[in-house]
Image (cartoon, rainbow, N blue to C red; front, side, top):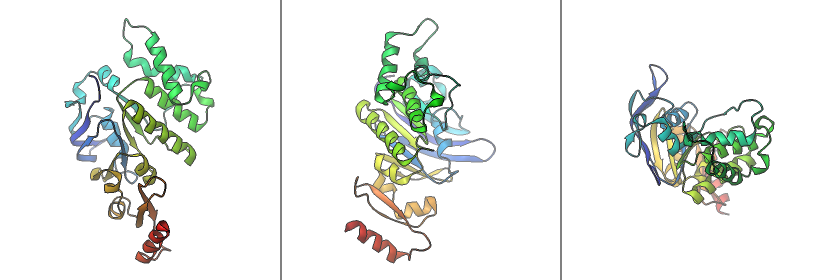
Amino acid sequence: MSGHHTLGARDLTLGYGAAPIVEELSLTVPRGKVTTIVGANACGKSTLLRGLARLLRPAAGQVLLDGRSIHDLPTRQVARVMGLLPQSPVAPDGLTVVDLVGRGRSPHQGWFRQWSAADETAVATALEATGTLDLAHRTVDELSGGQRQRVWIAMALAQETDVLLLDEPTTFLDVAHQVDVLDLLADLNQRRGTTVVAVLHDLNLAARYSDHMVALLAGRVVAAGPPRAVVTEATVGDVFGMRCTVIDDPVAGTPLVIPLGRKQAGPAASRAVAAGARA
């Protein structure tokens, strides 16, 4: 396998017991683009990502990598194509940053292949790309949340995959670090052409950084496409059960969701917010 790889799902049903969480879901992940999966809590976002990453075997349907069922492919072959950053990953106590990032090279190792100059270069490049080169010899457990997240992304980069899946990479980070991590992923996508698929909670950040968005409701896709087609007042109402008005982000020009609480007066408030945004 080489070049940009295709990832998708066909009639996919996933769950952890008798009741399915994701049901008869089909999607295609655009190659070389940033895709975000959004939806309310417990709608199946993380379950879908686990299914795409081959961590969860489907009850029905298929995850397709380059047109073939991902479960029919050798594990090492998949690991050379697709990297995963799970929710809240944990490193062993005392592990240094460089050693953690070096673990990303394991898919390229074999019985007779030892650590090489190519491995060394991949680790150094990943550390540099994530701005963590100066942290290389510090232990992971002494880093801040933002630093730690960058280091985990560096490990995924060292794997040198064409597809990168991330489950809520900005969770527990303050706003500045959230933007920092998303800037990093955008740079990675633009420089390397890496296909990025991320589960995100913040609709406005998702709209700003995405080429393609997938909105889930009760384990099914209710909207998919560019941010402007997905982030609408109707879809936000359906998916999140929230009244809102959607205006243009004054910085990025992408859709910006303004929630409307009980104190707002419905349509009148929507018009006032929209007028304020234009002013």
